[in-house]
Amino acid sequence: MGNTKLRIYTLDEAKDKHLGKVGTEKRDKYEYELRLDLLGEMIKQARKERHLTQTQLGELIGVQKSQISRIESNAKNVTLETLLRVFRALKAKVNFNVELLDGEIKIA
Image (cartoon, rainbow, N blue to C red):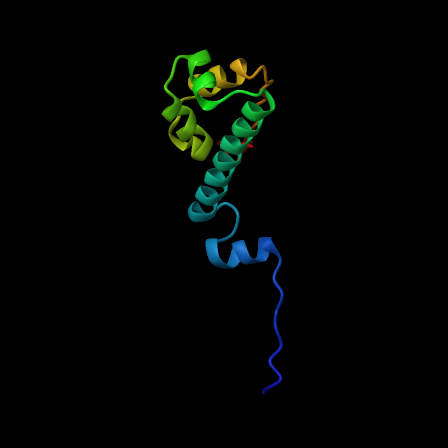
């Protein structure tokens, strides 16, 4: 056995190495999709805290259970209007933070 030393990377260092630095297209896409995954998970947790099934939440906003399931697993292809209806039905306050970085709008 050799004297192989393991290098420990922080999460940010690993993302920089494998996805690119912050601001690159691949890294920004990854971060954006991660936020949407977390949004779906937040919706699921809020629904469960309100003791609602996916069917019941769907009935409150006028969509099928399958659409609630899709939103919870992947909020990527849902309109802002639908998201706002979901949060209103869950009696949840929604805050958006918009930052202008290098002349572009980024949703934080």
